[in-house]
Image 1 (cartoon, rainbow, N blue to C red):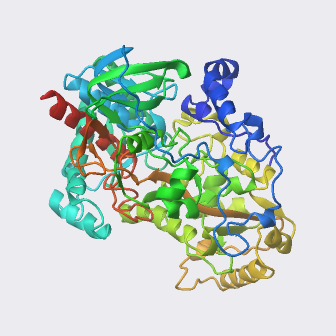
Image 2 (tube, helix red, strand yellow; image 1 turned 180 degrees about the horizontal axis):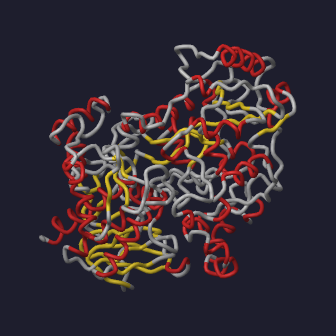
Image 3 (tube, one colour; image 1 turned 90 degrees about the horizontal axis):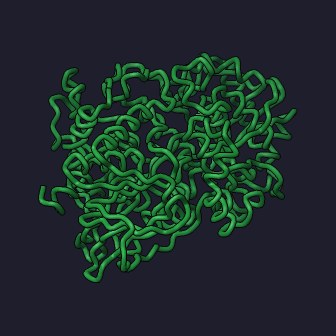
Length: 616
């Protein structure tokens, strides 16, 4: 493999499709205030393991065999907080009404990702003067990273194919009953029913606004028209771009590079505005005469909030792939005005979270990083005792729903062993096996010939680059002997060598055990040095704990009543998959997947806020 220079993935590079990498000096100037603030709070970026500009460089780290996922006494070894963009769980208190407002509107939407774009567009369509504020420099947020919506029924395209869960014709009550059973009756049935009723309508409404949808060959999937379902690289950007354009045409005032820092609450405890740092600088007060809608995402990248509200994710996940913010400020603002919390200990994860932060790298990484995708292939996988772990196949076959379930089911398998980490092992011949694995959905490795590859930052257009980055940082350990690899992964003597010996016996026999039903074509002996190994866990992509809301999307206080003037969409809001939902199914996060849930939540927020507060 040709050696490539190590380079980290930055939020700004990703969101600009690589353009800002070519204009680094200009980007640095624009983001100077943000960097200065980070330096003031956390120290110079060059001294922080969590720096977006460095991975595994220039830091004094423990030896690899001392940085395993468990403490010496067998308890969980916490993540290094410096690997995270944020580490603060304290509520953000509201501000008082100012003497003079800087801006006026009917409704202020916080966040311009998938949910925020829909909330702003819907509110404006219904006649509200709308301001939408966003911390980043461009619209789309994390939603644009997705490739499809997974939806279980109610969308017009599915009606044409006569498809619905749990059976056709579509019945929102039947879907709610099925989902509540899946969630062990720990969810709010009114909220689940609302998603079931309105999920399909929200996608059809987006089509009316200009999003060109197409239904997948397996009708669980809905994707932008130009996308193909053999790969999902930034395809949803087509949808977020269309909704941004619709909002512009209808008069939404977008304020980018202007993060919200606090809510404004009046003497009657009503939320009447938002404080922003305009252009990452001066504070400005926005008067929202009728409502504030919080749609800035969850807190996948905030260690303290994960520890407190989703401990299973804090322990079992090794990384997050949401590179655009997700630091939880909106959730903390809600807590600051007395909001209750719903969805405790609930999250959504994919398989194959690479444990970069244990080696001094950052926590949040691009999903299509070459090492992440390599880790998701059907290699020999063991726990720290040497027990082999099962692999879940994502090839579609006849049942697309089962293929999607495989992504979350494998995350569960990888997150639950002792120490909450798994270990993948392969030998020098690994590249020869990839075509035969034929994994689909978001497990397919990126190559330069893929459709719409121009949307991907240049460094990630060939999966080899990310793998070489991991080798350079010793995240993917390359050793000449299995004994060396065993020691440097932190495994006890004999654990790895014995597991490999058993695996090789299975491969030689050409038939797997019924507990681990690898197809024969996936059985490849591990015999040729150098040998490779990596620690992995869950790859967090959605926090399902958040502010409690009712079916009108109103934020509920700890006294059980709505907080006047405050609404929240998923994933700032929680409860879309109940309490203690380890992976967030069905299917992968909610009845609409994850990005679809954000779209639906924004549509519902915009509708309810105008209808309830403006009498429309």
